[in-house]
Image (cartoon, rainbow, N blue to C red; front, side):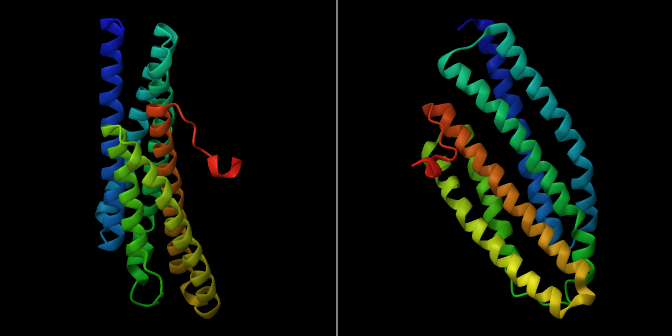
Length: 221
């Protein structure tokens, strides 16, 4: 590995980790805006998405430049490919976090008027943990942690399915609260999608470290 190539890989590592930190902060903010009815914070999260979009483009350009100029092989090639894919998943998580934050005003206005037997806080915490652990797996090259994130995705899928059925039933009995209920369903759906992207990141970490493509592995066995 040449010194120039090594420097570019190190710069790429710093950029993807900085992006991951920004995305995790954005998701934390979106969660806080929902749980604390903080409309000002929600607005801040929505506006911060532009900065994340710009950084995502920079990381992609760095990856493509490295591939074109250095033609890496083996572990180095896996790393660049994994970063390219993780970069996209992080940007999508930020988009979904912004979507969640946009629901804060509606949920804040109607929270006390409709009682829903659905533990949104538990789902928020679980998804936030998945994102945090997938990023930690990336930073520490921890395959075990990445595998656990993949397993945890089933929990969020179940939570979203339960939320869907509960909210659907309440739409029939509380038609005057349709705006609140649909916003709640939107949050649940976005959380489920964020969990999917966190799982993608974990799977790409496994690929990066072991060269093993685990996506859809269960479906192929």
